[in-house]
Image (cartoon, rainbow, N blue to C red; front, side, top):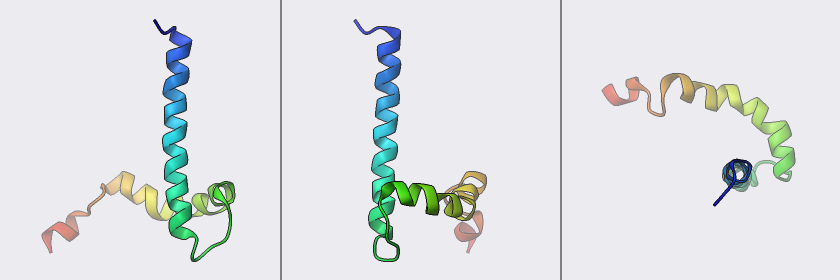
Length: 70
């Protein structure tokens, strides 16, 4: 049986791996336009991209209603 601490660690480890895979995907897609490893992209590019990409998705959803109606 897993202890509470062990279960929490497994959950956080799974979350960390998922985020690492997502970051690796971003780095692969950006590699033709920018240079840098995962940590440089995480520190330099993602903070600049957040307000332009992630924030609108959080506020409006993944598909804008104007695109659906047109």
